[in-house]
Each structure stands twice: as C-alpha cells, then as structure tokens.
Length: 357
Image 1 (spheres, rainbow, N blue to C red):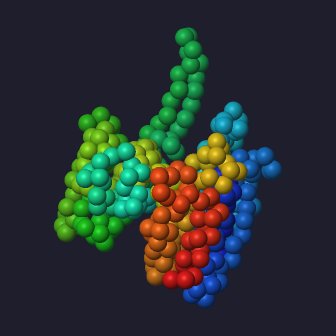
Image 2: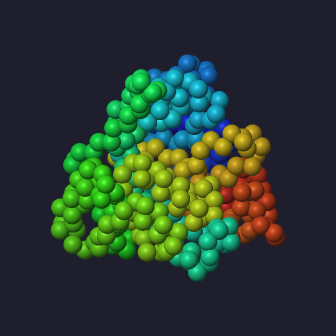
Image 3: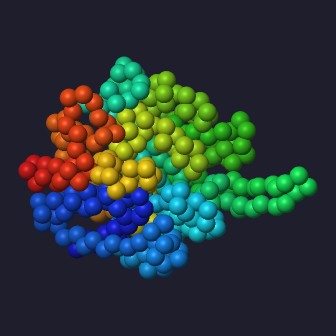
C-alpha cells in the first residue's frame, strides 16, 4: 500500500487536487495498486482553523507518507499576517526544508494542439521540451532576513548564501537528468555580479569533467530570460539557483500557453512533494474554472519519482494528451471551436480515459 498525504491548501487548491486524486484512483483500479489518501490542512486554511499554516500534525503526516500531493497555498486574505505565519513563508518553505526537498523539477512541454494558446509564433515553439531544475532549499529565500530603523526610514536585508555542497548536489542532479535526455545542460547564474554565482559557476566547471558526455553551457540569468522567449528550443535541461529558478519557470510556463499546464516535483529526501507550478488563484476559486491539468500531471510525476511506477505515470500523461487532442479545454485555454469544460469535468474525463486506455 502506498500512503499519499493530500494537502489541498487554499483557493483553487481544493478544486484541482481532487482531480489528481481521481486520476490516481483510476490508476489504482486499472493496475491493482492500493493508494491510501489522507487529507490535511496547510496554508491559510490551516491558519484559519488551527492558528498556524503548517500544523505539527500535517508535517508529521507528510513525513510518514510515501509522497505528498499539494494544491496551492496563500492569497491576499493572509498577506497582512506576521511574516512567519503567512502561508508561503510559514508553511511551504518549512515543508521543503523539513522534507529535505532540495531539487525542484519543472518540465515545460508544449502540447501541439495548444500551440495557438501561446503568444509566441509557431515556428519558435515547435518542439519545445525543457526541464528546469531549481535548487529549492538554499539561496536568498532561506537566508537571514532582517529590518532595522534608520534616520530616513528603514533598511531591509536578505542574505544570499550557497555552499559548495548545496551547489554540487543540485548540479549533479542536473547532469544526471541531461544524460537521460539529449545530453545538454545549461547552468544559469549571475557570475558577473554575484559572488554566490561565481562559486556556482566554478562548481559546475569543476564537476563537468566527470560528465564528459554532457555538453555544458553557462548563461547569465538575464540573458536566459530573453533566450527562453527568443529561442526556447536551444534548451534541454536548465539548472539554476532558487530565486532564478522561481522566476524562469513562471516565464517558461507561458511557452505552454498557460501556467495551468506546468507540473512540478520537489524531491531529494525520502518523501517527495508534488504540486502545480501556479498559485491559489483566489479570483477564480469556487467557480469550477481552474485548469487541473498541472495538478494531474504532478500526480504522474508522483508515480514516476516517488512510487517508481513509470508505466502508470506515462498512462496519466497519455490520458491528458488524449483529452487535449480531443479538443477539451478549461476557460484559460478557450479558443473558437473548442469544447469548454469545468475543473471537475476535465478531471472526470481524464480518469475515464485512463480506465478505457
């Protein structure tokens, strides 16, 4: 039996996560696996109910599970809480740290029928298949933060720190991923300005002789942000630090036409965490409009990386492709002639497709 912690979170999280659970239940029925789903509060919902965005019981559940399926957390409602109690800083970052999730994988694959949904030209987009690997437990997000009063107001400080060990383990992850794909790794930094980036680049260069079969390139983050739009096909695997990866993956999501298409896996420790790359979208919460595809694809990554069920992961991905190929869309991808369905209906359709396949 596989134990899966289910954390719907806030906003559209409570709508999209059940669609991924439907897909996993269909896999269970089709292949005879037993999945045990246990739901818990996290984020703003947890704060409202229990006074903290990451209750001890939720953390313990995650640690004792085989994998964690997360929806989305946060929203304007909780923006004025003390920093340590806000959903992102009080729940998501500690969860990553406690589970030792140092590697975040975000595949950016363009579904051919969705090429029109992107704002870029078709000739730029054809064949886009990028894997961004983001270091997830170091850098400026986890560094010391402080404010102090000054004569003219305040001074705020965020400390950006990386060690050779932290860089080496994520870069090795990138090299290994490149070996399994087309053998090309682009390391993204800001070595012309930041000391941490100079250490990053030096570490990549020191490791590269061990991976002579992988072609390594280096790119400044500002150039990378431009190249992702100008010529995204040049990239196969991108490896980068925490904040750069956070920004670049949101940009890369637009190559697919909607951030609602971008899944993610956070791994490195004994328990992996799987979530869509988008936020809680409170503006459409409760309206059955949210695109659940990224969450469903994240469930596929859960099968692949945590449960080692590669065939079953591919079946989820193929079912999503079939639904999209058949012309079904959520409102964010609406185009003339398409069949527009709600969140629940897309989830039902993917599950039915899994069972029929």
